[in-house]
Length: 163
Image (cartoon, rainbow, N blue to C red):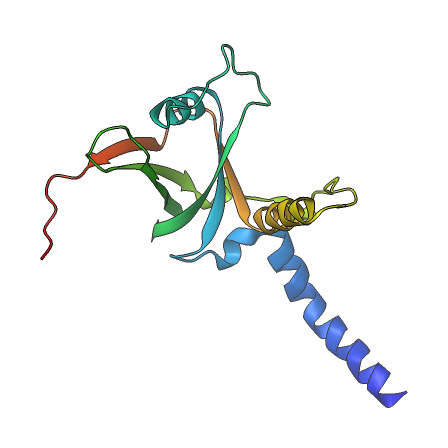
């Protein structure tokens, strides 16, 4: 009985901190943390074209590319996050695509509070997909549908030095 009471007191003491942290993911956002960047509209179409992937003729509101970006800089309430991927290309020149996004801390959304329709995973592949989705849903989210605050860059290898 005493141990139950001690656990109850501990939960009551920690509950306000847990609720605040759950409601506002930006409270603990630091350089190096990951976020999900939802690109839609022209930025998403541009990104897919650079990867030589098919782009819908008229992207609707549901058309979205999700990237897991890392916060690289924080200046007061302004954050910069970046995603990078090597582009597979049919030439000998290696290329890197980077997507940088600048945004306010207030623009982050905590998606972990939204109910997710995962369903039952019958196969190992379905369980893996559900695990990845649950992990992404645990990260803060930023959605961008215009190039405001976004820079998409393509970097090419200039010189390679090896022994």
